[in-house]
Length: 471
Ligand SMILES: Nc1nc2c(ncn2[C@@H]2O[C@H](COP(=O)(O)OP(=O)(O)OP(=O)(O)O)[C@@H](O)[C@H]2O)c(=O)[nH]1
Image (spheres, rainbow, N blue to C red):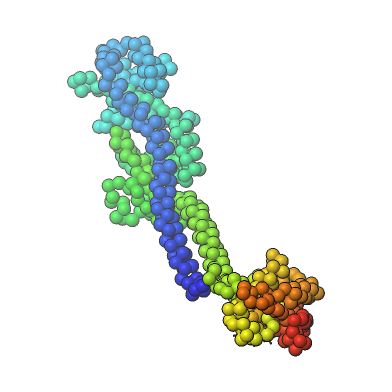
């Protein structure tokens, strides 16, 4: 088998293919995982902004254009009850807290049925927003239970200002949801208005409270942007790096309000998530590589140690050859078993060949091979060692047992003359040399000692058994 020569290149080839496949799948998995994480973290934020901010604002904008509201607000003398009824109905229909502020009556009509006088110097927002050119405004209020109020101007058909329709949204749920997202995805959010002032943020320190308004330019991540990044029309998908952190910025524009929402994700948390995915994937691929490697190694080893079929059998006697016996001996040695070894040599074989011819000599060899094999146990091994020589390996067999097997076989050969077709029977005998080892030794050494014993048997007159102990 050319196994040793091919083993290293085959292993390298398998490893190269495995690493290439692993690299390909890891890379594509990593890209997929990144996209999934991006989607997973952004979707809830979009949902929340749409549900809590965009929807109420758009609803108020639609209601500002309804004829019923404009008719009631355009009356010289406002019908307080009719306006209160309308506000109540709208609030119930849309499940939001609407209010109406009337220019003609200078009153605010609330969904809970209350009214509030809009006096200059007392209700600051009304007079401030009224002066602004924008038709929509947002303001935060109610310190104890923070609300965001969207105020949409209402005009009559001639463009005369009639007041506001507003909707107030409790921000507690909004902020709580963002706290949960912050825990799960690590991101912060900052809303900034048209002046780039922070109006709302997940970090309570940044919340505008009317007394202290922070500009986005004062925030550490904004300051870390490069001069070129600051000139970009949108900071969406911008990566900002400082000595302490690397963050990914997402920007959502709330055009109606002229607000911007920044979501700031620290990339370390992303890296952790994708590193975990990468690690588990790579571990799996490495496990497969390991299994493939071990399997290939075992297969190659099997072929290395398993002599091929054509080398296993002697064509004449159909007994195994030397290579096979060596393989069997190595197994016994690896198992640290004791073993006996018998060497058998046909007596006066040259004479048989010379007097009866080679064909008869061959027949003698075949007959003796069959007889020897029939005397052996299942776990014994026999091989044709040379011309008329045979070697028998008896694993886990003590010397006296091996000797008695040899003696019994020797007697049987001598007692069973060979019957030849058309010829008189032929008396054949064989000599036996036996040895034993209790511990692992080389096959050559065992054969040498058994051969010495055999030599002694030949000198003792042949057709007998001699035993030599290993020194
Ligand atoms: N017919 C036949 N003869 C073989 C084969 N292989 C070897 N021989 C012959 O076996 C003979 C062995 O002769 P020797 O080594 O002198 O041994 P021997 O005649 O048995 O003498 P002792 O071993 O002392 O009994 C040689 O003549 C070989 O040519 C074979 O496959 N077939």
